[in-house]
Picture 1 (cartoon, one colour):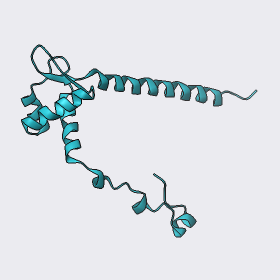
Picture 2 (cartoon, rainbow, N blue to C red):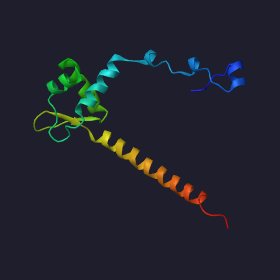
Picture 3 (cartoon, rainbow, N blue to C red):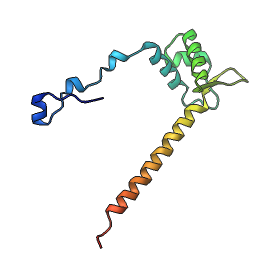
Picture 4 (cartoon, one colour):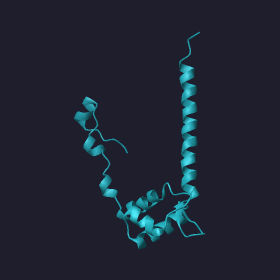
Length: 124
């Protein structure tokens, strides 16, 4: 977000916080918040999964909304239904995103270590 400077703020080096703050509640979507609660409910149940009813209770949503959200998460690859018993668990795509994030952090950490080592040498 581009910061907006008032004349007085620019003179004092301060950003107008009121205009700089993101209007978070303005963009809140109850259906998107609901599907995120469903996704979070699946965490920790990757082996045995959860029934749609368990997901609905954990996410505090109606069973029909849980089923709708689980199917939408499956379309996105973020959840999958276990074929043997119909339970649901996190899908591989979410894990792949997490692993990609970890790899990116490792690369950044390695680069930071290189720069730190370069700048911490004694001058010749």
